[in-house]
Image 1: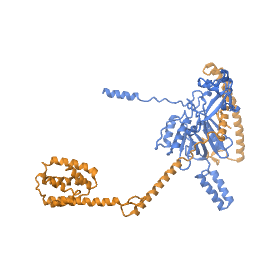
Image 2: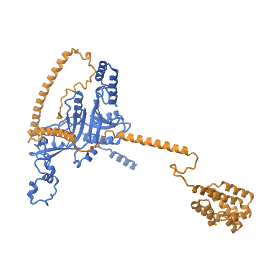
Image 3: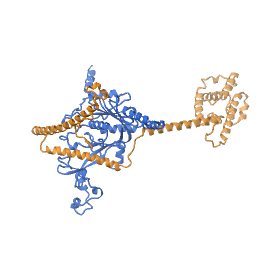
Image 4: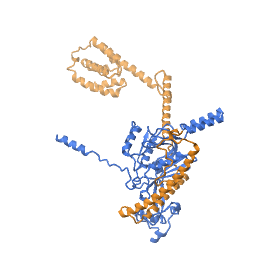
Length: 338
Length: 291
């Protein structure tokens, strides 16, 4: 009997304490957007890795180790999303053609569907660099987002910008600490090719007007090698080699009002250096749906579901009158759909 | 005895393995002899037994069990008769000795059979094979085998191709960056840098005004709140003015369209979602960059 009781007690002890993440920013009082990144259907290995990269990118307000099962459907995730305060879904899928990324707002939509014609994983990007950078605490704060080139387009692009702006928590200029801005996500829309370049960089600040040697010395706390120098003053005055001539662009220089780190102090100026972390994506907006992966189609790139484009096609057909021309256009459409 | 047995089995082309087996069995038989029925038997084996031996000799098909039993029985026989007899029956050495004992015809036949098999086997082994890709095939239907092999090859090829295709399909879109910093990447970095600089400058500007004021201190916090309120109100005024202008333009458009005032009578009723009605008029409420 006593043993049984012990077991019971132990069982009670084991109940894990779930610490709830705050749903509201404690300084500004804004609602913090949270996200789930998961896949629909079976993904090949490289796309699985991309999914993990995306989760890391969406840190810290995401489920990094979200477990998916084959039988989980969208509704399951939606059911969990409500109580957890999850506001956005990022869904990766791999149909027979190109891999797709869907960005959806829960619980009612809208859903943006992107094709991914090209992608490179974070590991690929790091492998391409001579010195990949990943300082501690890089992923503890959510990234900034920069959207560029979206202003020129139509309504669908505006919706895209709003979607991506709201996927990360808003920044309050008055209270934000610049030292917490460590990453940036760039979305650059090219109106000619209609492709969106998706990049992920880490932000680094370097004091301006200091030689490389001294910068390294202050940063590393290592005893420098003075064998080649005649005097100690040479270490300070003598110009180094190579990369030092790489002048900091004036556009990338910021004058600081508060201390950022030990190296970047308040009255000095600092240059902003970006280094890519990855993943690197090229996106193409294909479709916008009203609901969560369902509902009416607001925008469609290929114009099958969109009534407006259909109407224009019909007009074309009537005006041209030639059967051959019609067939050609139809063929073109078919190729695009594939 | 044991040595003789081994020699005999050398004749059957299966020395290495079975020599050991027979050794063991013969030893065990020697122990069992006084108890077994072999003692009771007469010098000449009965007809029945001879029949049995012949049957066994005929059934000799390199089956281990039978092979063991047959020599065992013979041993018992020969030990009863004489030592010479035991030597005589190992036909592989000397056939004629075996013939001397007419009663052991079945056994000699058995050894003869062994020889026949041996010669046949050696004949086969002597044959020089042509260099055939299929290798040595004894069966007559060479063609059939060749066809089968060809079919298998085709199947395997198809399988390999399918696998390759699948692998390629999985890799569609996956591009490993060859050169890390090409012109396009540099351009993108410069765009991103611009954005960061803009943000940092704005933050510096906003926070320099509150320099010396600590938001955790209640007095300073109040002052800061006042400042923020003022700026917020001014921002709102700006935005409302803009909205008014927008509304005016909208109104003008509506008047031109001659649409009914009651919503359900309009053509666009229920076509546009109510949730998304104003998404294009929404102001960006936080600091984000669009350029």
